Image 1: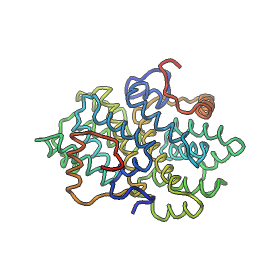
Image 2 (image 1 turned 45 degrees about the vertical axis):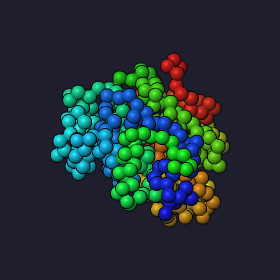
Image 3 (image 1 turned 120 degrees about the vertical axis):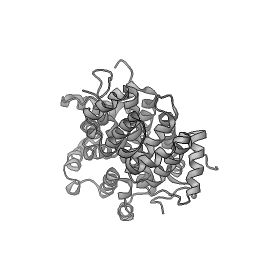
Length: 182
Length: 182
């Protein structure tokens, strides 16, 4: 049961955005531009960064939702999602994505954990300033979203079908501020 | 030196908001409504929650900036800021604020660390749903801002006068999106 009275039957951060739309609107605007805005990191890769950070933060709702979205968006490369969530070092993702995920993992621990050598490693496989910036901000943002969803014990559905549907919606429509009836 | 090329002479998250205003604008909108919007938690108390979380996240720029703002806003109770940052259990802040800070400290660790007993303790000294919600969201947000500022190694001024000026500005004008020349 959630720690505060939230709209019933609405999962995770969506129920929190409906509880307080004044803050929820900016959270949705931020995640939409971060995960769907113009970037040379693909939408699938950005969803994977989000799922990876959420997995490290033990936030099941966020992890399953963004892993599902990443699978839809990766298409025939969707096996990368399970690989990264199981063992990133052994995963077959491209080196640049692996280096960015490595930075995201450092950010998940704490900002100061990101060292010059992590940045150099990413640059050596082709990452630029903007990609490093966006990776750090996505990882930092999910360090917020994960804490927000779990800190108030919002509802985490257990039906796998729920996340499949969420993944499809997120991959097709992006992050649309939830309406009271949906 | 910052991990990416940022506007020179601009500290912390302000330089990051200027580097990528598309995301920066929503970050400033969010922190403005969180720390200055309508709430029964005073602006001084919310700044103290922000400083406390930033201190636990070892983000000096954020901690000093928000501690300075809290001191300006608390006025003759400004000794509470150092007390909380030194030893919250021994601090003389009101019990409700102490219980909310305790929840914020749990969120700083991870969302699932917030237990029913933490919520009950806060309710027993007068905290309501909205105050618990806002405390969790402020703590979660600073878990993002701290990682964003430090994860890119943005500039942390060392001059104490800088933070005094920042505290005055934040207490008087709130969170205004930084202009290229300021």
